[in-house]
Length: 182
Image 1 (cartoon, rainbow, N blue to C red):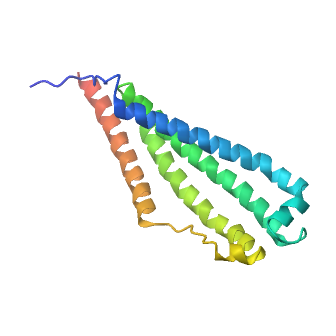
Image 2 (cartoon, rainbow, N blue to C red):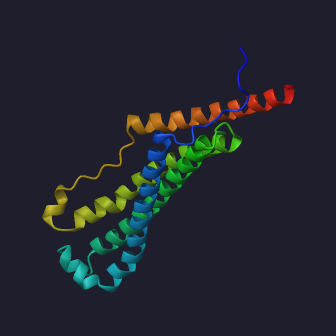
Image 3 (tube, rainbow, N blue to C red):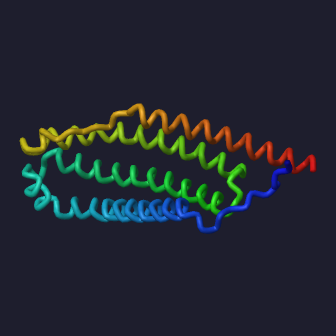
């Protein structure tokens, strides 16, 4: 039994089309959120009295500084997520085009793992201004929960991405070896 040397993609793979659409919508939503946070940060500073009144604290209180730090930090977190989903979209494009076992995908998977790890570290750092903000505003916000835990699911995702990067690197190497023997 002889195997076809070239994988023939299903051009109309519904699963890949849905995944690509979900990834594109997610990237769009994250870009919008990052844009609004970046534009909103100077507005918070310009309208500090109104914002301070809205969050029920003094204009000179540390809550305004903590809010600005949170806004900047969350926009950075959006950047990590945008990068992660962009890499996922590039991988799905190679699957759609019929050539997923390329060295670039191994690199993309490893970058996705590092991005997820860095994003979790960044979220952990964001708990500092988050706690600062929650403790400096009114009593209602004191009940807010701030969760930047590094769960089992996150750890497994990152490990699986690193393993898949190795699998793809090995698979692309085997494919090159096979092409060299024919």
